[in-house]
Image 1: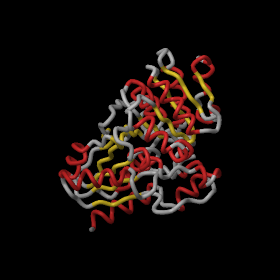
Image 2: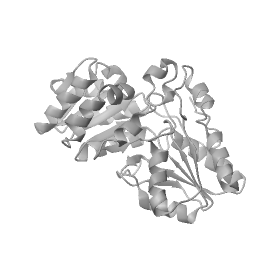
Image 3: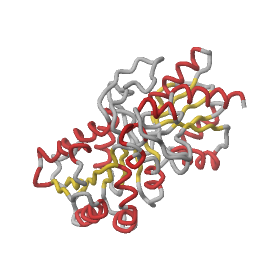
Length: 319
């Protein structure tokens, strides 16, 4: 599965959900870490933790509200609970419990939503989380992280465990291109610059980061140098890096595998409106639910491709 990557040489690696599972099992060396899963541990890859630390693994069944309530109690007892389920089930079904039992009391609960976005493909819109980043960002005090590849998902998992306070980590189903072959320096709240450029800035997270690199190469072939920023942390947003990009380049394109409202694009726009307004364009799912089908075909159908980012960049520069 290539997601249309053609102009940059990126090896396809593991999925971010698989990388999360590996990192979680490693984090289990800390006896405070416990896992609460929604009867999908073979899909969220929390089964890797279960195999090593069965006494600290709890299957709450297909009952996401109970999942979160159990985790909140564990956090109040001094544990570091990691709650895992499909992202749309966790954020939508347990929204009130996250609000009242995790966010409001600021409990140290780690929420992990896997199978996010439309790239899950054939499972269809009932399982496609396209609102989850907006939902997570709506909770006061919630940290929201969307890693681009397996190495950054591993680093994000460790950062999530170490960070005090409620955190949401968004992971995907398919294997994705490796953006960080040597591993990233991932600091929560600080974007990574993957490519320098002074003409336009491409801001992305998740699977869209590799696509932004592809689009940047196409722009370079036309003599246009694009800066590529991996905004793995949506909240807290790195406003300083955004302001610098707005000052130093002629516009910003934001690409995300999410609906048009409430996600990375909205957060970036809000930050720049305060600091340094600039021309902007947005590549996302739009204001619609997707259909079922093969991942590459769905991504193309809803405009989540390198060429869509490329077109948005050219429109921004012309505008």
